[in-house]
Amino acid sequence: NRHESVFRTALVGIGERGQQIPVLWVELEKGISNPDFDKIIKELSTLGAEFPHTRLIKKFLFHSAFPVDVRHNAKIGRELLATLAAKQLKSAEALTSRS
Image 1 (spheres, rainbow, N blue to C red):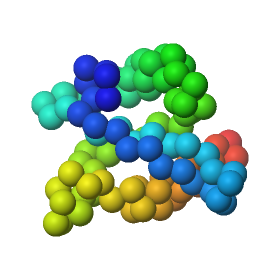
Image 2: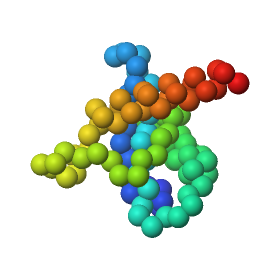
Image 3: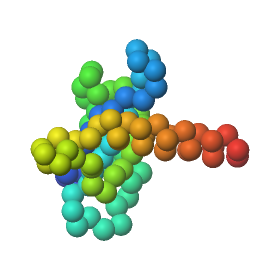
Image 4: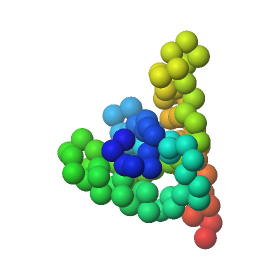
């Protein structure tokens, strides 16, 4: 969350327990028009490389507004984000393998 364009992030794991791949969901600050997603990913990767607990994060996805618990607006719906991440990354892999 140290990046100037990032409002908040949510780390989720996809795959089988014990072999999960970390995926970082990113919600950008409001009012950012035409974001350069590739540049932001590169900058987030550089920031993450500074710390042992974040250096293995290589998958980044963007969401316009994280799903939150209706009772606790700050509690991010990570289970839903994990499901969405698995679907998006599976779709991306399918498209890549067709090329």
